[in-house]
Image (cartoon, rainbow, N blue to C red):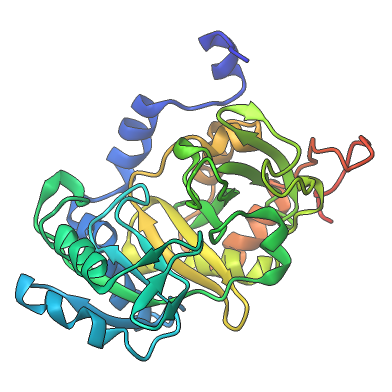
Length: 330
């Protein structure tokens, strides 16, 4: 499972130092960071640019308003409460439905109104925010995720991370929640990462806890059949975030909604590097290829370039143990 640095370099794998200095430091102007570090600002900016995001139910900005949370969500079947400045999925509370005066999580665990208020109060105090600074609680509508993905997830909504460099979508993966990750799509907590072919959205390779994975650990469903729908639309959405933020190196996190298709969840000016492991390939060759391209190309041209030049075959096996050769223009 371990490889020497020379082999990683030969495979085009980039580390944090190169990411921070060569790409983030060069292509991300720090004045634009607030646009992506604050989820509320990101949502409002996306709405201005016509990019679909989960509907905003409301916000809680002061401790005085905490007691109004129950009234704010009273008409909602389900909803999500998250810190505007949170990271790594911390502080996100998903309520699947309301039951009398209680709130039921996807796991079936039931919360009282006092639990809801305590969670919002913790958000405001900065418990989940970057640097522990005071925060805002953002309340969004619940995503009705595409049911074709239900067999690939456990008590959570799978999301798609796309790395966008100078407006080109260069690498993608889907993050599948598991029992180990407590229903969150967080690789560090035990979610499954699945590399995706840039041409088709087909699954290429799966990993969990840095080890290869060919099926979902809880549902047992083979990962080989996974394919992300609305793939071209999703890539166009990701690529257009370059114009929206003016950030040259960023991670876009999206979901597939049953009714609205691809939706933007959040953006990250310092996206992690685990996507390389999920794809079994380093980022460097793709980033080098993009740097050789001329400036000024539109979103459609950049997406077409990525689908044509970054296509590849997968490593996953089907239920019978046969190697699945999908992708590469499928």
